[in-house]
Image (spheres, rainbow, N blue to C red):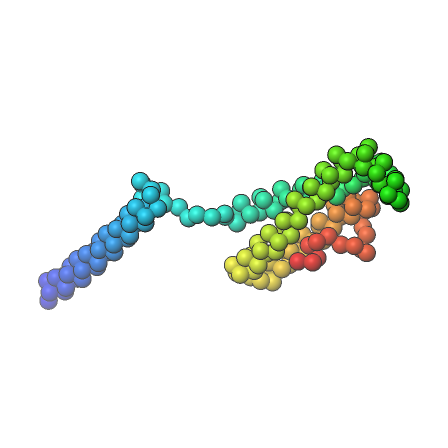
Length: 172
């Protein structure tokens, strides 16, 4: 009886091993076919194409940094040079003749910064879809919104707290 059970167990094991081998062979065949289609020589090095979430985060952060540099640093320079005192076409022409490079750099940095918000919104949705605990995820977002309010207010208004105008985190 023990011999019969061992024989059945061995037969099952051999059948499972054979099925696994066939599945591996099928997977290797598909990988080779994909490599031939894509023109790659080494099937083991097939990778996904596209931009990763980490790359999107870096692009969004760089874009945001450039935007904030324009909004805080260059805008203060423009205000210091009298951009707010320009009230007519003659004054505008004189200001632009003297400070056109600074103004166009400001505009370019602000335009590049516009890509940050849609990227962060996309990443936020991905985070919501893939999180295990939505309450903790939203709690962390709210906490970071509160923490980032102080540097935002210092940079934009020169005060520690201005509740009349919040950073974009509260919009998310």
